[in-house]
Image (cartoon, rainbow, N blue to C red; front, side):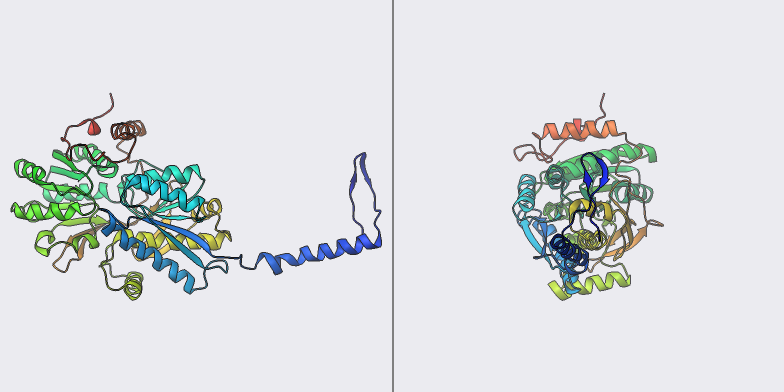
Length: 448
């Protein structure tokens, strides 16, 4: 055997090689040949650490705690099947405290101090946007499990919840056709409801409908008396509700107290799921509607197995769309880790774009152009068992369009920047601000 090397003077080959050197290099060569079988395929030391970042305290805790359970279920199922790459998956859980600034700080801590390989978390769009800055700065990856307002796409986020055209847009068209053209909009005073209602304001003229009232309350506020009075005054055909968190309980209670029934004035909710309606007396919520990409009542075998596993691990509880989307995100991430043979965030992002999954909601797949999932839309009506009867679904899974076709990116960026500036460089209204806003405010007007 000869070992060739180049002289500086050109391509003359020299093979001065002593027997001792030959023996040494032969040993090194054989060791390297054996490494793929003996070392590279062996499990790395220690677990794969993942961050779970949701609110365990504050107004969003009741909504987000069940999402933690679903995320943990997926991790436990992965570990029960041998983990990933011969390593266990270890969850590090952090509390976002229903505060976007805490979410950002905890995301950075999880990445830089806890050394997690991926983040699963956030509910409100305010928390997601705060974490988005962190994962982009640190070249990391977030799986976000909740429907949202769109107007965003990031190489550092996989969106397993719905884009607007997979939830808001079809629900508005359905409701206007079913109930009538006079629409009332209500929401919490942060980025998702503001943008959702801004989009609805632009969609309605296209289907010969109009907004007759628009009001907002701070996250966690129970002061809805002025809103109820305005609804009674405007007498809309349908109410579109994007309130988040515990404020929904106060809103539906006040509607009932005012004598407003689901038959007379139906509410279609975008952020109220099974866990939320369980908190309300059935007479206050039965007959109203919600639109999601998953309901607990879906009859598929995959859904029955998912619910059974949740009950087995965490006890009987309501199961919601964000819980299912969180579980889907972990399973897709795990498949990407297997495919990439690494848990490195960059490699995972590239591999996740090839993923599809037979999920409890149906077949989902990642759209390579947007990092969102193809998803089926469902509309459910609350029954007297605190569940949803599915009364409408899209004919097939819908391709995600984070930027709806009826608004321009210029308009969208202007509106987002205006809200961010008005809210002192945050994605939710400051606490000292008024809890409601007039319908025709700057946030919903077009740029000049």
